[in-house]
Image 1 (cartoon, rainbow, N blue to C red):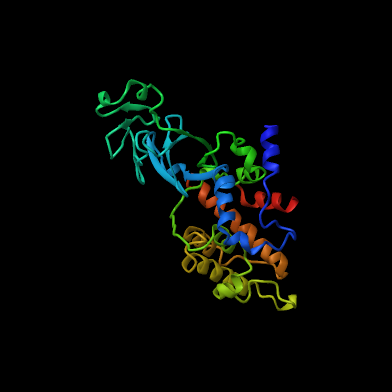
Image 2: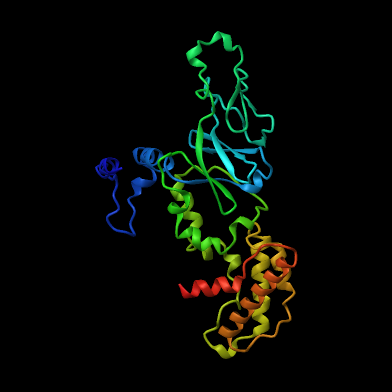
Length: 315
């Protein structure tokens, strides 16, 4: 390991970041820098391949693609998941596309080689045409890929020597454990390709600096404390909050769930203090409690949102 670390330490850093808040522009378009990301990042980092509800039953599978790699993620009998290279050991043809069930195994569409759900080769068509040394047991199985389960997701890593998943994603993992990620369910999934470097796409969706200009419909009068507290009107504030929640749900692709909007509507007549800061805090706590009560009443495993908020404030 020491030798490997020494070798890695000698790899020059192209377009090094010399000022923390100024990133060299070449990192966003230079082909050589992107190739180093391919070689040193994406081939060695843990990646969320799917939510487990996408493969709910044993032997259900889905295909995960990253760059030129295709991985099969299969649900196992114990509720976990395994991952396999989606490449027939004969000519490298993809044995599956998309999602489905492999209860009867996989069949390569090119020459008919067959594999069990665990990747074991079960059949070679016209096996007598191959030399015996090309048919050794184990050599023909689909190549396994490291796979771990956390937070209701299956994660894969193309590097057999990478540290375990949790070690790599702390303290992120501990923080989200409190949100019971494994109990969440995807209601809709939207994906598309953008003609940009991946970092540009990530940064555009992670920052909030653009919101006021790009989404002016979210700038709703009455939602924030006025400069003169004596002008604060609790009723106007509640109406503004409901307007905001409806806009987030109806006009922003469901960023607030319709159920939660309906719960908030049930608090429309809530009496709030005249002090704006106290009123806003009271509204948020009552809304959190109502959301938790509604979901728990329907058997959902939801954390106490106000407890999570207190934890966040203490950090």
